[in-house]
Length: 241
Image (tube, helix red, strand yellow):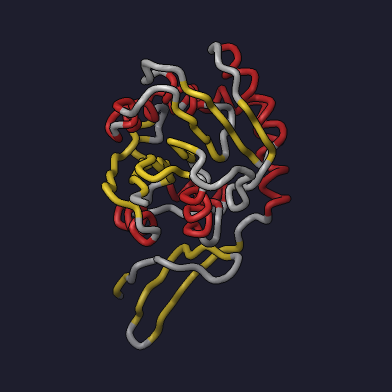
């Protein structure tokens, strides 16, 4: 029995397993949640999401990966977009690294998550500009942001490259694109089962950015708290032109 790469998806489905058994090819895929289903699930989870982020020490893990990406070396007064902002952990992690002021924008399909992000970020002294929107249809002009980032968003989509291309559209030349995704692992399989997501390898994550013509691609596993271990990976790259 030989495994083959899981690199593409049928429309509306995420591949879970692909195997060659003699002359047979066995493939298992799962239907993704519709935008409406995903919105309802995150609306329901929003009340306790900040507590979940604390349990897995997401902000700390994100900060280490962001530091490795070199984003803190960029110029002051950055325009930052956090796609699928959730309760704001990724934006808070970046803010903790920056020596200058940055303007933080955020989008999410969940109105309840936007409320949570607004609360946690204002408690940290930030004034985020938040909109309810899908990462595949970002409501901002071309080449507007210095940094575009997303934590555990792309894995929900049957075709992540579609969202990556949209994120690149609003990114300035030379700007940084930074993403975190669930990694293939035992804990990652549990996440995949519950949320119907991709669980990616390092090669897949880097390949998605490479397919979108990103340069200077970097990778770093995230060390999460509780029992999660290295269940996530950060990947980043820069837009050339």
